[in-house]
Image (cartoon, rainbow, N blue to C red; front, side, top):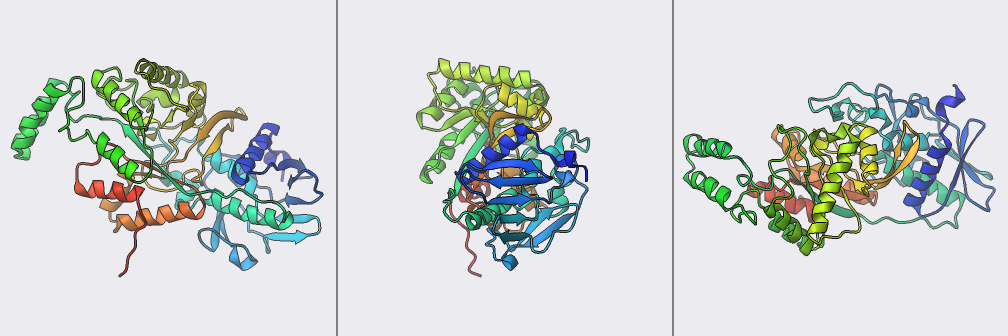
Length: 458
């Protein structure tokens, strides 16, 4: 094997050290020597050595095998299931971890895995995209090898933590607490309020002729005329007070992400953020202690400069309304993400975090983690100063899988994925659109997703 093909740049090593510090709460040192990656701490001659370096973790590819390792068979405590998925181009050694007087030898390239998954190196330069130019779940190594529902980066780092505790028994590693983050992309704050009259008339015709719904027929023009300084209280998409009520009942703080541009009228919002009703909504969200963020318009994912312009527009409006926040973040519209261009856009815009990285067509762990981490540009080999908060669940993906009968019990599915996040001490990051709450079923699932654990006594 060509050694240079598996070497990390100095910048990548620093980023990995920061990742370990963020995860374990302890400053470790990483160095490359004689084809090995060596983990050490100051003042100790012991080290954890990783010699099983793999070139696959330094390339954009999804067409290689996946091994499996039984953690409990070697005396480790797996956080999710006994067998950990191990993307690998070759068979794993037995035993995987060997201890001696000098420390330990780790027989899996866990640092390469972290680099490959967290930088989304797998996605760079790919052409097998969907109709919205997104990298689909079905093209990923995780989907093809049936571990998309597993936070494998978190699982392997927990195993690494157990190795660390055996090599250096005096170290006390950081314990993470499970949390739930609820956020809402404000694509359509109103069903009728910002639509042109031509669209309103078409909607009225549909209510009358197709659905025989006289209530909705008369409601449409009334809400259109009544949306001035405030959103109309009867508007079906005006669910914001209810969303904040539910969040507060569970001790949560929701985030609401607003579109501040129009780069494709077919897919972007029908409102302007300067509209008095939207300004009033932003003020109300802020008054109740919830967060306002950015939802960049459809075509900004490939244009970093446009993300910056839209972020500046949002911050200007908030300043005019007396809204101040300690941090600013959000999520890309339609989850459109081109690595690393979109990453650079968020960083150049001076935003603190992004929460785009989940799949639009299914649930799961696109980055192999439910922990926040610092973004790294694998092309330029620089840390970008942006925190990434992986998206675990979008309501439309849950509905889609339910309607396809891939999920027969959505509460149980929510329970499974929440428990997985709980087991690795991560964050269950949820996207639920304000416009997806028109039925009792949808409201029940949202309440459940932010609430308790489902129990089946049958």
